[in-house]
Image 1 (tube, rainbow, N blue to C red):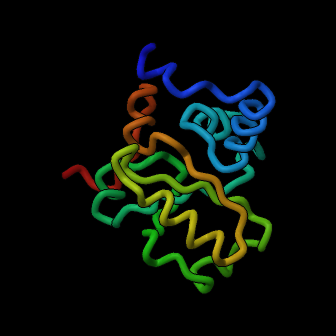
Image 2 (cartoon, rainbow, N blue to C red):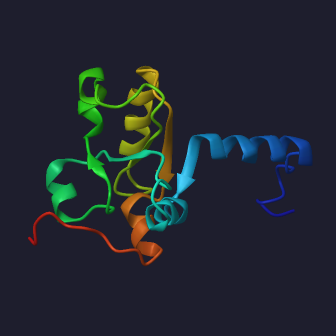
Image 3 (cartoon, helix red, strand yellow):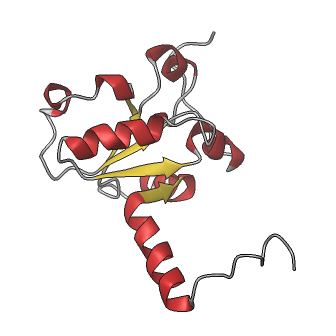
Length: 135
């Protein structure tokens, strides 16, 4: 018996429920890219880069707004209707900033998803980053 099969897989019904539920909490780089590349109105969310301003300036997902996770407070969100969907991302799988940002948004009663993969995933998909400066 391999380490993979040592713990039996969940039943199909449980697996289906778990994986369907996961899509309520996350999206991926390809879906975000498709929304931004789509027709006007296809972007029905606010993409938040929750890294610091210096990293954002060096390269970020085009269309993203920079709001570091530690600065997510109600007053910074006042311009957005309460039902605005936010999508957070950070550097990549090695970074928990997107999760921290999602927690802060959820604590404020805001709909939120995490863009899995972050900047690393974006680049892995061969999508371009925008830069504020050329350092």
